[in-house]
Length: 142
Picture 1 (tube, rainbow, N blue to C red):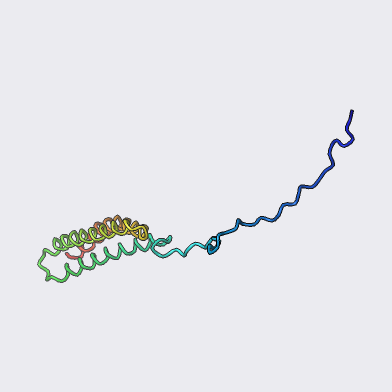
Picture 2: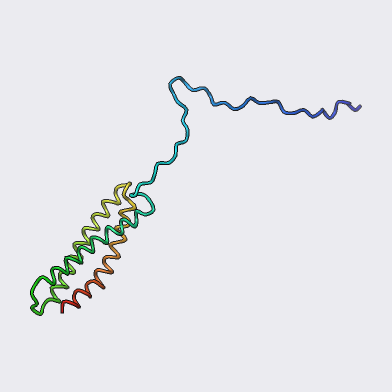
């Protein structure tokens, strides 16, 4: 008892209509993917370098103030002590300013990376300003 119609003849799959989006209610536009907005300089990959530069600029101003204070007074033989004191005071003020500014900037989402760059500049400012720059000012104050 074999069935002459077995196996069934090959038939192509039925044609499907092309995909159409579901109908939208009147007044609603379909949403399409929009390109990403451009990255601004506060959030881009160079923002950390900008923060680092801003923090180091504050330390540079403190160093210039130290040099100006040290060499503005007439030489009395105690210029080295005055230079050392001026270096610690201006370095401490600069560190405080950069620390407060970086905390405020890191609390704001838009400027968080810039603030992280300023935090890195604290370490560099303390190492460079507290070491090499202070030694140069005190050494030349004689």
